[in-house]
Image: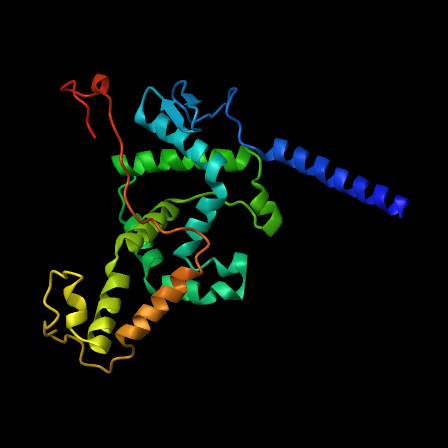
Length: 263
């Protein structure tokens, strides 16, 4: 029994040491110098006590390149999942349980809209130039930086990011903010199942007795309850959170034209 105990302690020790080595090798770097050929001038990135990166650059394109790099080193796995949402790629990572979620997001046509938008994008426009600079930063980390442990555990290969990945992420963000996908079917279900009076306390700004003008003459293939159920089922299986809420920020008076704080 004593030998078995020592063997178990040895195995545990080996696992612990291996884990520490992996952590040190794969962890993000918050100090030192990096070389990026695309940069036009030096860029400084420093992290405050909350771990938030602050970027100082001589031009916007360099700032966006640095932003792409720091995003990738801290959040590459999260970014990988986000870009897979619109193209139905979650089940490749998590298995058949995510097939219905993949089908749901494919049905929204986000990827098709992204491809169309990128195809019509002027490569010389400011948004295209700055977006490409951001992508350069991400792809520099993918090529030169350590591989996040999640990729090693799942066996997924890191792949460069493209312009459509940005638009697909924005498309998912737009869907997250489109609360009507969830609230409208729910309110209709409440009205039809329980009655109009159940909506009075919710102070809905539109009349529940509104008559909808049908513009589709074919046979209805789904009900409000079915839409609500499908949406809820797809979203409940997501491995990444939705973008619900908003951002807040403050600009100090020394950085504003009128010398006052902007919130």
